[in-house]
Image 1: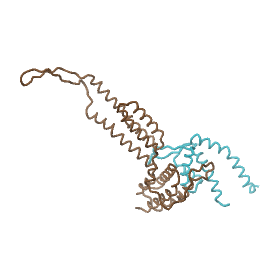
Image 2: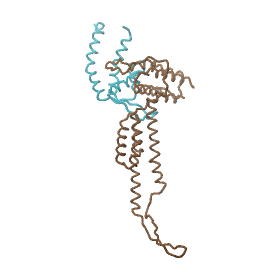
Image 3: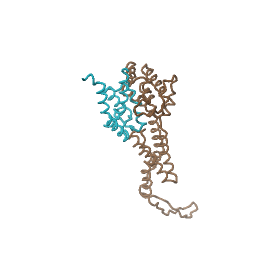
Image 4: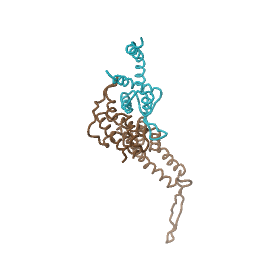
Length: 112
Length: 245
């Protein structure tokens, strides 16, 4: 066991975080990268978000469309599909108990 | 050729090779998104250091390719990710995968509507054109602006004003007026003749010509525009490289 296991957990949670961010409103790829990599530091390699987006699209959880931008070329926007919304709800339902259990088991001794 | 461009070329060559085993659409999307990302991060003429930093932050080509793999929790693996091959993929191959077959069909149907409508089978042409417009608006390959232009400029769209001008011609010149005009031959005999005049306004030749040019030339221009845009979007790396040149 080493630092990679935390990275693995982070990677496992990332798709759900992307879905959650897209649940607010549609965003283009670079916007998501800035948010998830910059603000939340969930990804070390910015580029790995793009294959994830493509994967979510092939799974039917997100949808894409092109929109003109004020500056530069048109951008590909990603938005949540109904399936994506359901997937997010499922994760939301299961997450707190998982988080609390891991918290208690892993951090329990330190707290006592 | 700048060193920043060399760096990006090498990076995309590695990324193309590393993603070679992925489905075409996924690969095209990832490459396009990474290309767009660099377009956002970097200035028009980045220095070597800027390019290096941007590429470092993106992560290695292999890490990006691996992120399409099957390690997602609910993941259905869609293709084994191959480690970076030694031979980079020819860009032409990549470019061709960029345009979806359905988008090409859309463009062809849009084009097919006109000749069909102009030929005897008007209703069929109209149906084909309407189907094409539905496909056009459902496609993710074009922006709303482009779709609007394609809908309006395409013959189906301009068919209306053309119809109007034809109607106008028959309305303003409903019946040509035939007046008797006898004329005298050289030998002095008189022959009955007529002259046909149109009363009122007739559509000037230049206006008619302009409309027909619109009918035939503009759609071709729009079709090429649609194809190029769809093509570019599947081949953004080339676009980024073009920007940095």
